[in-house]
Image 1: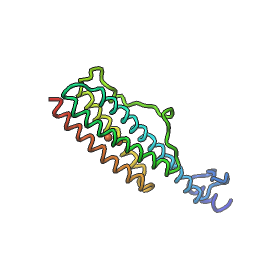
Image 2: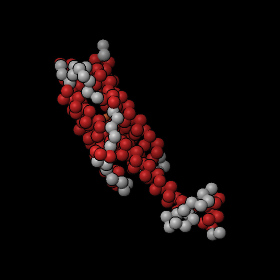
Image 3: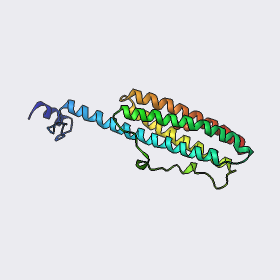
Image 4: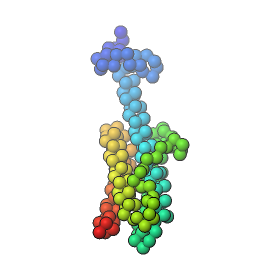
Length: 184
Ligand SMILES: [Fe+2]
Ligand SMILES: [Fe+2]
């Protein structure tokens, strides 16, 4: 039994195979841990990327569909956010690529943003405002998950997600303000 095997056994990894197919050394195990962690981060980044793309789709639809005087400010704000969310997707995509992943296409995505589906009544501005708040909440939770996942592992992704979390919190605060007025 070699030293690497002894140490692997001591770590509770008896039989763990390294990249070479032999029993893993501490170094191999560390490398496996790093690549597992990196893959987990890439997968979570892809989820955020998909959420941003879906947000762009739904903000765009609602910014066009809404009718009425009360809708005008909301439409303008959604239009401004479309550019911001698209840029979030771009930044996430670049980070996925830098980490060795690939940005997914539409067929690899499953959408689920129920809160932001355009309402049947195109003057139902409050439904859209509430939908935005929920969508921003979901985005914040996903960035918080990534920030925790990256802790001590990937400071660049963590820094990006902290910035994006700040943007989403601002969007959410803006629409919470709209809700105070529009729900009167
Ligand atoms: Fe975003
Ligand atoms: Fe946002």
